[in-house]
Length: 558
Image (cartoon, rainbow, N blue to C red; front, side, top):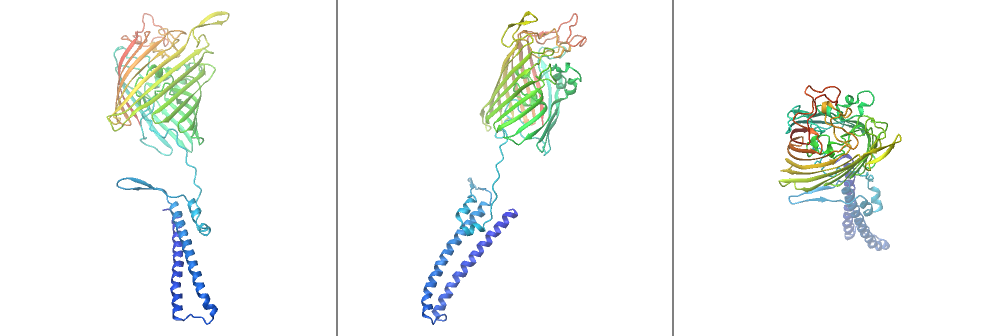
């Protein structure tokens, strides 16, 4: 009990004792008055005084009755006021628990007479209840693309650290002799152990100011920048400036609505549903819809939470997964995330207006990416603990600069009629996830398909060291070049702790054109020769139309 409540309780007890003393004094006075009459010691010689005695006694009795009623009212009011000062408690018994409810302090004023009301201490007006944290009403660790750690290993008022490790061993049944795998943004070498990503960072938060950092060491620090052509425009070597950073931003949290965050820097895009970090995902190798679309944006975002169930997040960014601009225009976009309950998540990402083809001003890109995730079974007490699925669909296109969104068309350029081939993107992916034995084991089946004429979102194989900026004639990305691909995977996870996953996966991938590394590999015999991606006399890469491999990984997140 705090000091304020103790003082109030003491005042209440004192008032009660005083009231009881008054009652006792009056009650004792009545027998004494009667005794004096019986003995004649108080008899009056005045007849008028004698006649007034009965009337006086009757008045005393009436006053005493009224006083008793008033004291009873006062005691009742004081009891109610004392109860209102105490918090609601729960009374536990052997059979059940029942809340002990109390009347609000307003009842005191209604029950007490004016004199008692003046004696009672006044209570403060209750403060407004705090608004609910966004999406805090449910456990979202079941989602694809969302980390399953429920509690951080360490936390403080100023800093929450984060450590990630992704180590894999890939067994490619094509057995490329140069051990080089192409066409993936997650898998890069075969028949070797590799650190795909090691990241150290965390969240800084104090006085509504926020910052986030996650580093990346290992293969991600080389493979992610090589898929960005924007550093080829201008100076200062953006690829090296950013290669060891996967996320880095600072911002401010405004206490408006259910929260508003304004951040600038490099942040995750999550177009394609899967996370950039494999620990967060249901599968190690996501389908093309995810693997070929952006993992990060460099720019500014504003996260607006109108309710605890909805996020609206506009972006102003340099370009489509790029450190800088490709031409003379920034891109814009945004995300809408809606989670009306604990088993449904609906996500929409939109992108527009970016001129994201290197050295091709006027070619504008549009893209829509939309996902739904549903947890359709949840019985943690049974051997099959949970079941959920995710479905993602993507559409996009480019127009201008010699290509068309609407289909093959003709354009007049410098007085000449020129064919503008159709350049678009259409794809989907579907995954179903099962958890067993209190989430100790997980099993996922999934896959998807894409059609991308023009190949503007197809990941360029690193033939003779080719990058997104260099390109290569061994695998062209000219307007109208056909590309269709499909894949399927089966993933088994062992998760003895919320901080680690042991993963075994089988992947089958195929395309309508030679694309994957074959037995003779995609590197010239003496290593990369000449300019990156250039043709080498007397040599050609061994590209095949399909790929089968096993992915083994240990994934850690603190």
